[in-house]
Image 1 (cartoon, rainbow, N blue to C red):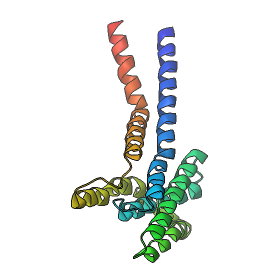
Image 2 (cartoon, rainbow, N blue to C red):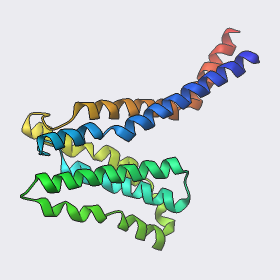
Image 3 (cartoon, rainbow, N blue to C red):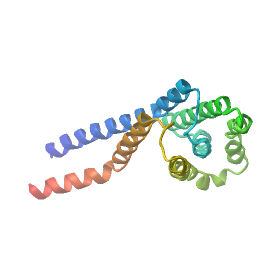
Image 4 (tube, rainbow, N blue to C red):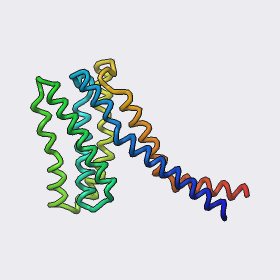
Length: 191
């Protein structure tokens, strides 16, 4: 029994550390891309469509989490995402002089989830799925842009690495109960 408790504590610590790693990676994942855009004074090769799709999902996550009284880490994660994507939209509007005005209206998009959440709160079970769906779909415009231009110039690889590491750590920490059950079951079989 004592071994089970020790293993449980060890797995709990690992779960916690993976959650910290995941949150940390996702919290800073876009900083290298922002710095790359700023240093180049260009967003060429970086998909504005992908960022707009991500902003839509982040806006629904942030507003829904806030309106339903989710824990502060979830609300702040949504807020940080909205702020990061807003910074990218400002960068697109500054560095893409031909289409600078088309990006700025998107900055006000979080008002739409707010109005939907206030007027139609029963729709949140649907709108809560927007973040994971947009998270996946948002990569398609970037892949298409890289394929069309036959280069990944303009895409920050450190941002991609942070996204990948954060995703893997998040998946492992999410499935902690399944991993825990598997480990305990196998230990009991050998005892």
